[in-house]
Length: 271
Length: 195
Image (cartoon, rainbow over all chains, first blue to last red; front, side, top):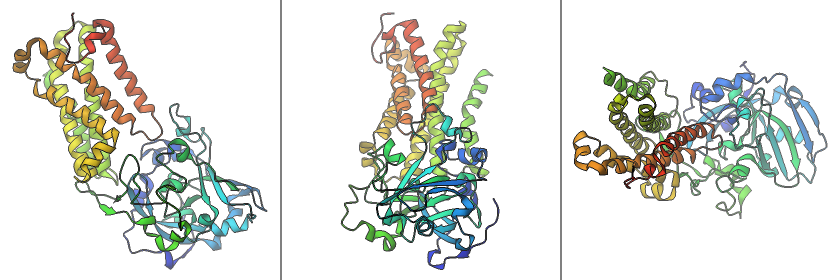
């Protein structure tokens, strides 16, 4: 990782204790490199992230293949500290460096038919050993998506770094999504495709287990995962003898910024 | 001497775990890690216990049997620690009823554990004598326990089942070899076989 230059975004700071870099970089879900929490840190160096390009297509005026440095403008870089709530009931507080997703998407000029934006992670079994696994039930590449108004929300962020340096590969280098009011699996890593769509795309976890994971995946303590409760979360690092439990908040505590997006929707149905 | 070695080897998963905790190598979510590792250790020892009879039959050396009880009790020991860790470190002793009724994989794990209790209690030489011909069919409950434990793990896999496929094949081999040598009825718990 290399140091980045950026400005702080004071409106997105928090006085919560940050999760130490070591925990953020060594405890990951990135099934492209294995399903163990330590696997990504062990094997993600097998992925090459330079050069990197992102394919843009679908309902927009500026489709094409963009080199990463043409998609991003360094003067946009800012630091934001966000809570990250995993669907597995643990959470972290992470200082990201990146650009608002809306800034990048606007430059690509989505047209009026663009109702959703869809993302894909790199699919390259040569570099990603998890994709070589015979008994993986994931249909690669990893896919995610947002409704257009969610994507344009001020909180939606494209991160290229954390703790002031470029992203470690296991955290989704060189560019990843961060949507802090949704469960972590929505924040897709190592993005190689951005596509504007008229219809709602199918996403990886939704395809795999539709009764457990929905398209929206908003953090919601009232709607349990079928296999565990979502009322509480373990803030990492957690204690050895006593877990660092805390109550999970609606929209992961970002209600003020995002609740209006879901007015009138039954969030138990659209989970 | 052999007993001491078996004892020490069976204790290794716990020693590793404690070492990792003490040295701070357990990672940022110790409760989860500790619970998982204790559970896997219990299951692995269950499989090792099931290996004793085939080893005896294949090598013709009855000495293997002397270690079966200790291995089985170690499996039970890790299972007890696993259950306690789950209750204390994952659940925090809350939500108990909903956890065991609404989450089938936890219910399966609970059944696997409960089945081990009578086996641990009747594992002594004295109990073997007292139960006589009933001892063997009762102790075939270990097959059910191992199958339930395997399902308990498989159900939790979120996407990649490679590890559980390997364990499943091992378990299947251990059961199949018995069916092949002693007949399918030798696998049925609580029923006396003719052989």
